[in-house]
Image 1: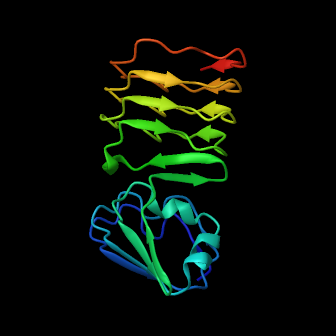
Image 2: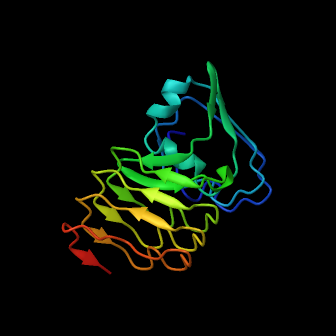
Length: 178
């Protein structure tokens, strides 16, 4: 098997462990999304080989997998899941209060921070171009958002339900709010 796609294991409520061979070349979309009992992922190759798999970052999305065991060590669950410049996900289990979007991120993806009730402030990086649909929705403690010049688009409901948010300074580069 060289490619794993969405039909492989999405929504597998009973799945607790997975072993992947080093022959995997691509992981398509969030293959372990909503696999709530997944606690063990073993990869027979090295950490560098795993990180080189196209779409490897997507294994962390919408599950509670704590780590990946590789032949030469352990990859810990990241705070952010970033793929090709898009911040796909922020680990909701870290109880983050203040977040700074890392440099190199050009888009905050759909629902990336949705429902993180402990989040109080966000500082966007200077290269950020887009905040997608519901990116920060339901972040009920979010008070301040620092948006750098360069942002061009803010998606539908990006800050919906952010009841503590009082104001946002929109940059002159902003072209579209949908």
